[in-house]
Structures are given as C-alpha cells and as structure tokens.
Length: 224
Image (cartoon, rainbow, N blue to C red; front, top):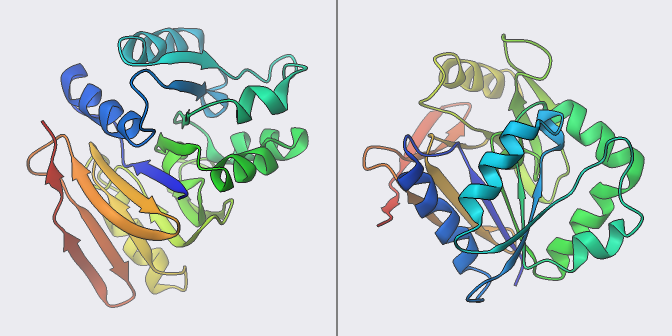
C-alpha cells in the first residue's frame, strides 16, 4: 500500500501538532519508526530543523536530508531506508527545482512505491499532487505543476491565510484542475491514490472538495 498524508498546516499548539505526527507515524506500523525530515523548502533553516527534530524525537528515530552545499553521498539509501518521510513548508518552487537537479523527485516516487509513508505540510502537502497553490512567486498566490503522484490540485492553509480560499476557487474556476483544500491542522490520508480518511487536530477544521462550481466540505475525524 502506498501512503501520502498531506497536511494543510500544523496545529495551533505543540500538543495538536504532536497528534498529527502520531497519526502519520502510526501508518508505518512501527513502534519507533525511522523518519526523514526534508527541510529543502525552508532553505534548511537550522532553527526550524531543530524545532522539528525536537517534535519528532519522542516518537521516532529522526534524521535530516540536507542538500546544501550538496546532498549526502549516500542519498539513495538515506531516502529509501526510512519508514516515513516528512517534507516541511516554504517555497515549493525552489524545493522542486533542487529536488529535480539532484534526482530527489525520482527517489521520492520510488519511496512512495515501496510503501514508505510520504507526508508534509504546506509545500510538503501540495508537492505530491499534479498542481498546487503556492506563494512561491509572491503573496498573490499562483498555481504550479508539482510531482503528480496524486491527481488534481491542492491548497493548504485554507482557513489560516485570508487569500487562500478565494484565490483557490478563482484559479479552479479559471481552469486549474479541481482538487482538495485543507485547513490548518487537517491531514488528508491517501491510500494508493484514493482519499481514505480526513483527520484533524482542531475541532472546527475540515477539508474541502473544490470544483469550478464551488466547494463541498469534508468532515474530519478528530484526533485525540
């Protein structure tokens, strides 16, 4: 079984975010899984890496994939020896450009096909879809082509950033393939390529199917 868990964003508290990590790691079936944190989109900010590793440490054996000044010599094994991979937020466009130069995009597909759980929020949510809504090109938000493991388009931070909902609906109405949006704290679990479950660490949060005709709310199972 192939798994992608796309998160619209983290929770509003560390406790809420811990519930999301627990859900992702639970899909590995391991008591203490190996997880690889990929901070490419944030330009590998050291403070962000430290916070993420601290969040993951109680539940998993966490490692980091750095690409600056260059990827590690054991890049292939570093990616494929994991039980889960978590991709952080930031610039999706810059991240995918770096991945493609070094072949990380191909390794991510191989990891997915091997059953390694792929996850992430913001850039780490939309990168798995055919298209995503991103601020990589400016605050006005634009669509961009992504990896295409999952069909359609995706938008994170649906309730967390004021422009997200109207802009995504505008882009879909103008021809962007329909897709799915997620509020902050919401996780979309795709088993193979089908949406299997929507969960949330926030009681009021949800996901939405977005088409040219509007949006339909998908209620989320509350974690915790």
